[in-house]
Length: 255
Ligand SMILES: Nc1ncnc2c1ncn2[C@@H]1O[C@H](COP(=O)(O)OP(=O)(O)OP(=O)(O)O)[C@@H](O)[C@H]1O
Ligand SMILES: [Mg+2]
Image 1 (tube, protein in one colour):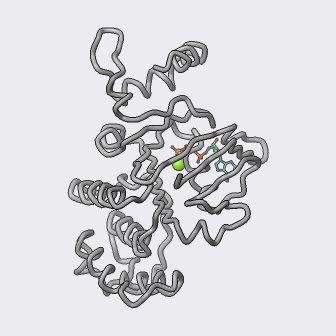
Image 2: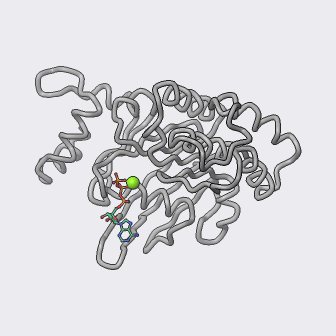
């Protein structure tokens, strides 16, 4: 398993952000993490990236336990947060050089970086300081930096927000390609139709707990009350806005 989350809890002062989350992500899987604002998605990703210490539970990335082997875990991982921080005064190419040095990449990194520049339409911006780029371009730089060391586990927090239609298509294709090459991918997004299009499995979170975890195929087999196939959006509202007792019953039924 590429990502293993066991009984993960995170409590901030008084807020219980995540309460007992358990799931795994396999190589080649693209897991869509969805849930209302405050559900605990970013908290879960930050803990898996080793930025937050869990209040309880065990997290492993590509077989490396975050608690005992954080360096091994981080070497296998790319994590791009929802508000990626770039170095304003460094150019796009200097960002790649920085990452290559930090991960001690072999000299071939330059070829890979050239491909990423092309893929994300950043060729013309390679020598520009990132402070002069648009928001979507900065997002593309952050994701390219994440891909540079060929991570086996990729976690992207809201990667599609703020991108133009071409950027969304490019991002989806890049994620598919990485997963076909064996990477485990986890993305959070509120853009449910894009999640439905891209992801192979879905995890719905609400108030720090998992409401549902299933493959997209299982989701597609779900039928609403009038006999129509249920979309991810229908399912999302049914689960997250239902009476908690109804939701628990439908989860117990496996819906
Ligand atoms: N640094 C923090 N200190 C205290 N509470 C926090 C902190 N970060 C998050 N929280 C709380 O933890 C809960 C989960 O937040 P989190 O950011 O994980 O949600 P999310 O699912 O990513 O939401 P969104 O869809 O808005 O990005 C919220 O109640 C939030 O207020
Ligand atoms: Mg978030």
